[in-house]
Amino acid sequence: MTLGASMRPQLNAVITGASSAIGGAIATAIASTSAAVCLVGRNAERLAAIAGKIRPTARSVLVIKSDLTEDSAVEDLTHRLGQEFKPLDVLVHCAGVFTTGKIETTPVHQLDALYRANVRLPFVLTQALLPLLKSRPGQIVFINSSQGLTARTNTGPYAATQHALKALADSLRQEVNADGIRVLSVYPGRTATARMESLYKIEGRKYQPELLLQAEDIAQIVIASLQLPRTAEVTNLEIRPLIKSY
Image (cartoon, rainbow, N blue to C red; front, side, top):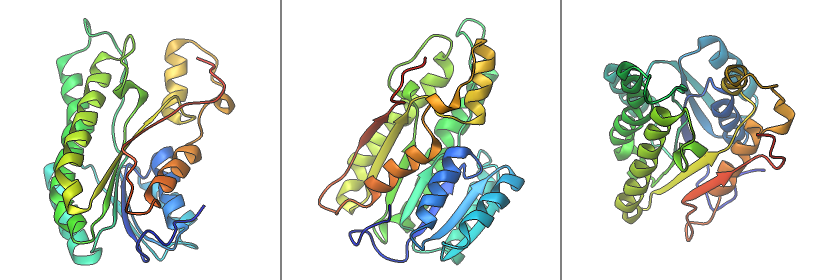
């Protein structure tokens, strides 16, 4: 699937968490439209692999290994994008961390780390990049979680940050629609990723990735939303595996 004429040609897109399976799939899909893509993540090896994969179709690829939970890293990224990568058409928030545990026993420092990565990071980065996005106007995508809609047992601290991310996106949408900026939140169910494989081990269950969502499924739903004519906006998308194995 390719982006239609309703989107501006020669896209510039920034994807955080691009070294993850979902972030990498979204970057690959956007790059296939001859876009300029900026990959941001913490795993240099994985970033290099994604960059190598998308270079044949992307107009250009910028790779930035960075931990955006540090304010200085956000400042550096914003400065570099302003110098090398403007204007900005698409910002995809796919970075984040995940933990499990009961509210009764989860250390508060773990909650702090979840908040910093899952809420504060997208808040600070969105705030920093809004001037570039307004100049297009652009689009912002938040990759949330099913836990951002319904919290399940042993996920309270993580789910709390995802509910906060939903509130952030919903409020932002009300603020920036008047500037022509569209804001999409995606709430995937269980997806075949390394994170999910680890979760299944914790749960003591057999991991069957073929029964779960694939990262490419999420990438395709993001692309479909981005390519809508500017008369429309998709606000919230839930996507689940067809075969419910959990």
